[in-house]
Image (tube, rainbow, N blue to C red; front, top):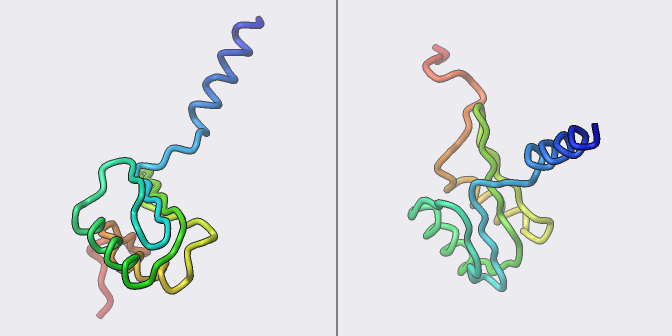
Length: 102
């Protein structure tokens, strides 16, 4: 009985663990650490944005079956967040693809 309980806890930890597909960490406008497969164009754009408006902080990208999310640390300024969202290659559309209004 004890083993079943421990196994259930282990499964819950694995399922709910914080596992982003990409991580970028900036310090004083310089990229100091990356994790995951980051598209070259997005990486270069982020470096350029950080060079023009130096900031400290972390950017995490989460992906599931339906959407891709950008999560920023509190240290990232609002205007920099918007610039990074604008160059992010996996823009999520709120409408279904193929449906256009006249």
